[in-house]
Length: 185
Image (tube, rainbow, N blue to C red):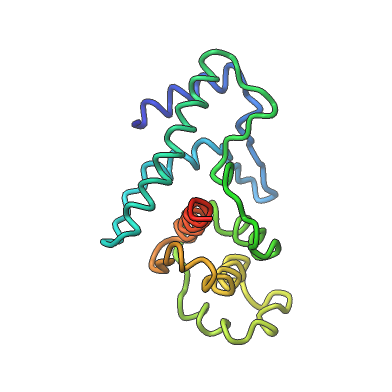
């Protein structure tokens, strides 16, 4: 699964299902394209090494998303994509028992951001959530990291989060932890 695969798939989607790719125009003139399949593709091709048992857990999750990606491509090719079809990073993952507010903020603020977190800022606010909660005190991404820190003890049992990665890689690790948790339950 290489860039040619993705380029060909995107071309077919633009021809057959153009609504699958959302283009958002911001007030500053910037246009950003959102396509869930691009996110899945990026995850599937993520080459991070933890050098412990997490590598196998990550590989299992990537294999699952690779199969979904191929299934999506097949449905596009056969013009069989339905409105009910849900192809996203979060599809098929159970977040039962995870605080809904935390899950929502983690998913909204981390999933597409390729920047790296300021770990010192996160540590600074980790024990002062009530002040961090004030409007404009912390960025959305820092707030999401604080929510991830809040639930981390519950998910570290399944997949220990490595914080020296980008925001979106933190999100991917969060998804892997939920996926592994669901496999064990």
